[in-house]
Image (cartoon, rainbow, N blue to C red):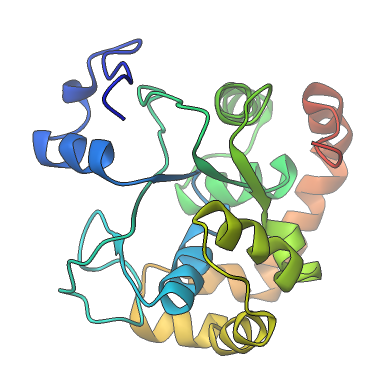
Amino acid sequence: MENVNWDVGMNISDFYNLSDINHMKEYPLFISYPRTGSHWINAVMELYFNRPRLRESYDKPTFLTKHDNNYMWFHDHDCYGVLPNTGNELVLYRNPVDTIYSNMVYYGDEINDETVFLRISHYKKWIAKWITHTSNTLVKYDNFIKDPVCEFSKISQHFNIAVNKNKILNIFSYVTKERMESVSNDAINKNMLTDTYKNTRNQFKEKYSNIIGKIYGSMDDK
């Protein structure tokens, strides 16, 4: 990491304290856009590797001892676009329709064309930086649901750790939404589990899915 330029774009110190910057230089980076399932995947990774991530605060959900400092990676969203991309990061992706809607509800945005297109623009820039034309290890939220063993194997191989299929399945079975909620109220917004949320999300999809799809293109083959 010594040759990485940590002065890209804007001054990183304007957005992160010195301690976090030093930690990001020291540990591998796991990058995800907000509301893409990082609480879930971080918790699974911690149990699988039996080592903690470096959390932004002790309130972040974990099933390990919260004060364990034998860190294995540093997780961040890079919302400000200031972190350097070394081409060797672990990156979590979720389809833009669900991601944009979840962000707007979670952060209390008024849903209209203007605010939707602002979110679209921000996520598109993030994807361009961390996914498009990079050699980063890409994992996808939807693939964890479809085939957790295959998708998590990419993470295990990223850290050069042997793949244990039974262990992966057991941990994914253990880390449920209910258990995640029990270790941190921040992990799951209860409103997002209601029928009202699901219905309004479906309405959002009906109105914006085609528009968002045309702007982003397909990520299925990336």
